[in-house]
Image (cartoon, rainbow, N blue to C red; front, top):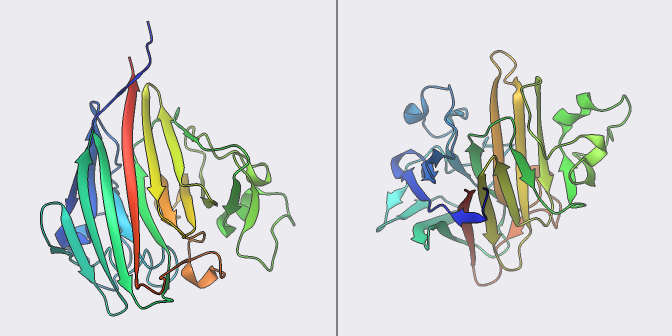
Amino acid sequence: MVTGPEPAPLRATYDAAHGGRWTSLHGGGREWLWHGPEPGRHEVRPDDAFVDAGGLEECLPTVRGRPDHGEVWSRPWRVAGTGTGVIERPDFTLTRRISDQAGAVVADYLLAAAPGHRFVWAAHALLDLSPAARLDASAGTPTRLHPEAAVLLPPGSWPTDQPWLTGPWPAPAGLTLDTFGPDDGTALGAVLLDCPRVRVIDGADRLTLELECADQPRSTALWRNLGGWPTAAPYRSVGVEPMLGAAFDLADAGPADAAVVPPAGEVAWRLIISAHRFH
């Protein structure tokens, strides 16, 4: 007999020396983070090409664009106390504290920079999910498809003068995105706008990701790679990525599409990840 969901306490581990990368998100008898086939993550130096090793990467001040996946993933962080790491760059300082609160993993962030500084941040979480998994978000959420989706649409559907095409979740432009299914050779990215909370459903397990931040655009990015990327040796990877901002590339972000540091010189936000399991 199936009963209601019970909390599955989570624990996170991370690697401050290698970009603050989250290396594990474990609870309820399963590991939620996917780990990829790409070697060399520990040998990365600043300005190297991104190494898709899986886990959860901190992407700041952009996701796509330059530098690819941002500036902080390829640099060592300074340990500043239990669960706390700091990364200092010429334009900003980011502090992150990861803690356990009633079985949920809570990550508190503080970015200090000059007033008016624009940025995009994403918790680039690649998840280890079955083909039966799906992503639950509010129906009708405006969702931006990025250009790699153009080949999946009828000829002439893609706007040639825009960096994205917007439609309602779960099937913007007729592409069903909330189910993952078996590998089909496709790969695409999307951003769910004004969407600070989503839930991943995979069999009896539920993973909820929620982003709290006042006065900044909050989104959820989706990377749905079902064996379509990279071209030379494709593999499967699924990213569900809480985001400040509304564009993968800071260079594409309009006035309302990036987070902006206010006159006080700081932006604080919180990421809450919790899990439940049906028995």
